[in-house]
Image (cartoon, helix red, strand yellow):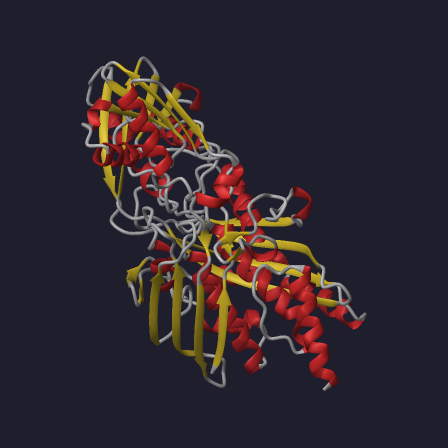
Length: 538
């Protein structure tokens, strides 16, 4: 039996653009420019809160400079801005300062979990017991309970474990609200399972890769988790392929050579699964005179979604991407949709575009002349599950505790890739945020007073902090949507922290260190080295 505890720091999502809203009374209604991930939901919520007819409100969310889950809900400031414009009949604008974002925007992570894993002499996982505790804030935004739910329902992740006992809870706290943040429970589930896997490897004397190989799910097709039947994949083949591509023996040999020279060096693995969103999205496609317009019910925060949707429509309609105009983020012109949440926009939203284009093609081939318009609401029959693995190498200064992440490699399987370049950008961005959690970022309070209220106090990774990342990709088509796509936008935030944490523990294992918590700052690592040295002396 091995046991671990993982405490995730509370994080500030910190998109490039803070929350912002501008409201213009016109024509008996209100036009609202809002930095949001969910324009249609924002309109419905505003109408309900302010007792307005939804037809009086037009919400526009176009060039939104990042969101990461922080802009999934309405905030009191935004409701008040719309209320003031409505009652005063005057334009109203509000933009959050960066310090206001730290104080009152939703925070992410902060969950803690404990797990016990029973193993046999051959390293087979027999039973898992896990408990997750999630902090909330003084009010609950949309999806506030999703991280606690995801962190438990994803367990035991990619592993086949015959017996499980899982529990999750959430508690109110006198802090800013906690909401969804890129990954929303997925990184928490991954960190717990991957820490347990490494602990099991040490207890049995097996290599971390080998113990994973013995316990990962092997079959392509549905698998049963405690939360229900989900889409599965051959994770063992994926791991073997990745270790070959990355040349895992060479990573081990380099680590061992550094250790022989007295360095504190380690490598760590993090195998992850990434369930995408459930439910529906919508699209309207119009073909006329050799050109097509795609009106998408979702939204974009810099994903390059316009490019991907144009590619899908162009292929389906036998046009070029230059012939496609993509519109999104305007409740007056685009059909209703849920929005950019939970890696759902490509698996579900792009499937809606594909189905609308299919209808147009059938009607065109039957002799119908333009303009031809097709409206589609696509409901996914199931949830697409992406997967992959991250490998990290780290060196830690014995005297100062300063960590140096020397290299990273990953393999991600997001099913059908629409645009490999955009997918690679999503992996790199997610990795940067995953590294931030693992090594730098943390919000701190003292008797309710925020101590880390600016970038002078809250460390964010810069380009110089990122090590070389080698990205590998495979494509196992999803069976749960028309496109065969899976999510990839949150992959780096899920797999990277677990791999980095395991690498740091591997580096300090020769000293007898068996527990570390994120962020892995020089202070925390130095303290662990110092405490281990004192233990050796006594």
